[in-house]
Length: 134
Image (tube, rainbow, N blue to C red; front, top):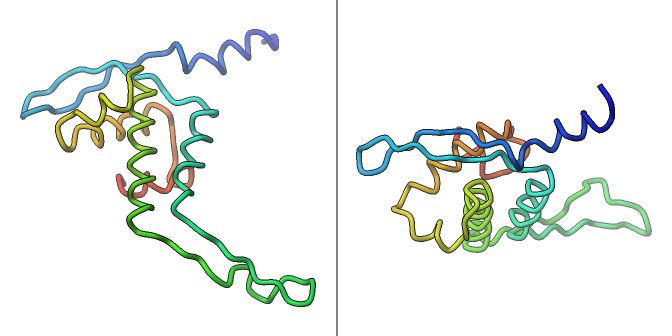
């Protein structure tokens, strides 16, 4: 396989659509989704980490015996950033605005996100929010 063929195969994600099924008001509905790209995943990881503050201890120019002395988590901000990551992932996968995702019935963005996780082959360590769906 040539480099060009490999690159085409690796970037197929943006053009590749999968038909997935979600339940809306008790009825199954089909929806077209595309997998996330590695660049989009990196952006989601950055958004998700905004709710954390890490303080690394230092001792006379050397690291303290524990690498992390403090870790602050603002629960409200953490939840807000996880929701922002979820809405962005759904919006990117569907090719729509985040505002539209926010107008869906409660629970629908989460259903779609589960499908995005599946078709993007994401693992628990890719995004913290994924653990909420396992």
